[in-house]
Length: 606
Image (tube, rainbow, N blue to C red; front, side, top):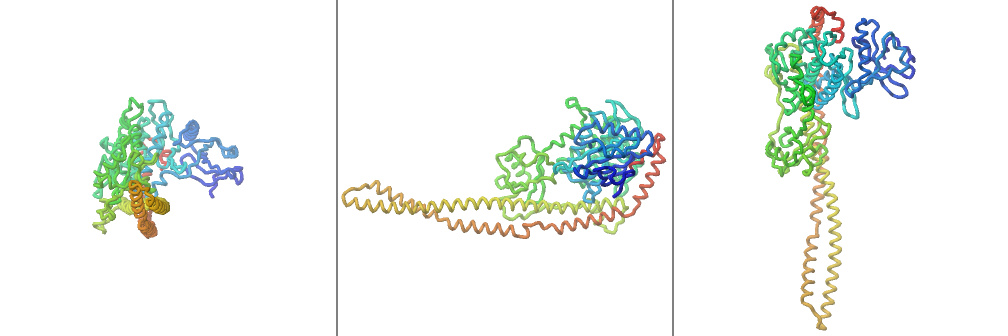
């Protein structure tokens, strides 16, 4: 276990240094754990060799951290007395420990090579958007937003994102502009990069760049080039342009739309593109949009709140294996939603069986919003399954995934040679395709499982009803036997009375009619054939449950996905011109820092 400088064994009392979490421009961040209380904190210590200016920036970070209190900004806490010995001539910064790692770690996973899931993207948008809004309301510009400065924490089974590293944050008065910056170039707003005056909109650019990367798996503008190069190519882009890439032919293509593939559903794509157009506007005065006079906040936050408030139901049509999504207006009835489903699928409302993942049928008396769980967003998080009750066999046609243009490009000619950068993109899209096939299978299996759970629930109810029916039949049989004996006795007594001249044709007729009804009821009460049919149905359901198709058979799909991921890892880590490009980038930055600034601070996070 690596021990930070100056820490002697046992010197921290009950606090034990568990691991070094990271090393930044200012110093080290280490994890400390209390041996008895199982409490964990992160301690950030400053390097002694920092310049006077950077020491001031360090102390400024601590001052800012201590006055902030927001769920999406990592909290500062008091340094335990036992660790005060670590303090040199600058203070320590103690913070809450977030165990989920940072956003960069998540993005670097091969399965996320073409972006995160929709639920993860929307969660990040909500959390970091809220954190940035809080910082700006408190007159603080972060200036160094990037995936490495977003950490993840599991809070009650839900992943929460938190902003860290306010070392470059600027405490400003409303409307003021700042002209000094030290930070990371890849996510830097153009005006910071060019050493021009700037405002809080620099955080919009960085945030938009991060969200785009979470959607697509790479940054929006010629991500493979060094910043000094792509800035020159991009700075005259159209205000609505949110994406620029180099085609297979080497030409640069600009677009106002998100690239494919990504995991966003079609109903989210357009509002997300509109939001990114606000965030990635090159003009800092136009970036973020105008301030809404009613809500007193920039247009970008109004649109962000709108995106996050959308109620979208995702339905897997089991007859075609196609996902259909509907935007739910307030108070829409389930019948209204079913009418829209009929228009989309051709399955009439009377034949629709809508099941939740647990196999429970949707309640027609409740609104359509029962299809959407509170706090759950994204088609990868919750699905409703549609079945056609008028059919016992679904013959298709079934929807299937299409290969992307890039993958098709090399499928048509497997011998084609591509530069490593483009080859990685093609392989990433191939991994996304294979992973998508596995997800499609998993959803179909989940739909089948929902149907099985529904059958088992119906089976349990049928068993209860059968038992009730048998009990009622037995009671009826006993009452009929008692009635038959009683009526026979009454008829015998009546015959005896007739010999004495006492008779009543009306009463005799009524008794005869009751006897005929009793005979009819006895015939109806014979339910043995129903019991046989129910038992036969029970057997069929149990056989379905035992069937291999009733259990998950995803081993093959998972092994194929893992094989694709392993191949992509090998390609990603293959020594290539990317390393040389990186070295050249650093050398170029050292030569071309605008305004004659020292490169020490600018490169410390690269």
